[in-house]
Length: 296
Ligand SMILES: [Zn+2]
Ligand SMILES: [Zn+2]
Image (cartoon, rainbow, N blue to C red):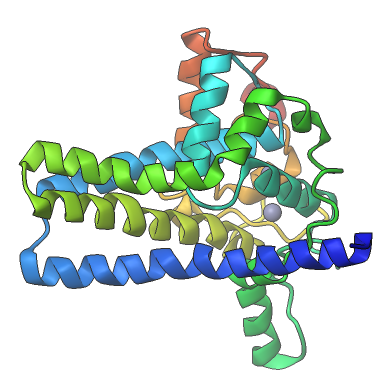
């Protein structure tokens, strides 16, 4: 097979994977709502949703984003494994995929080569909607695999990280089955098992996916701009809780290497606080902090 054909096969595979990434959590969320309409929703279902959501959201924002992509701190091996596993359970793609695409996003933000810029694609409202759709999740179906290894070279030689990357699908499945198992053990009922799988698994993936993707679409379209960056990044306070601080996106684009996105005390940055706690426990080091007293 030629290199071109090989690339085309990989791109086609990635596009097919996008259908599963977008489709399965959507179907699962509809199933969760329908199931709960018939059998009710329990405290266990809600608790499993919240615990799994927080764990995987930290895996994405503190892990895949601030650690693996921007290397804004150094992690001990157990923390590295936790962040890699929790981030993979979010089902937003394997580590190499996530890191490479996000590095491409920063390198070419809101230009032709940005994998998920929501810039208008054509004239008028139609063009704006097309652009937003592309920035949110349409890009997943058009993703190009060519630059991945080039933009993730630093992790390719890390055997442990590559192992987590390799076991991506197993980890996604584990993230769905684990809340089911806990739901079953807590309630000792099949309803607990099904509720755990649907709410702690599928609906949780769906909710975090759209919160994360909203930073790419809405976070480059509407919101405040405190820093005059060359891209169209924005801060969206409303999305700060569900993105555990990832939505202070203009702050982030202004200084991508910093471990915290908070620039004012009132800007909620749960991932930043999590990194701070890990640092106090000496589980991470070399944290790149912002010094608010000298910054602004
Ligand atoms: Zn951005
Ligand atoms: Zn970033």
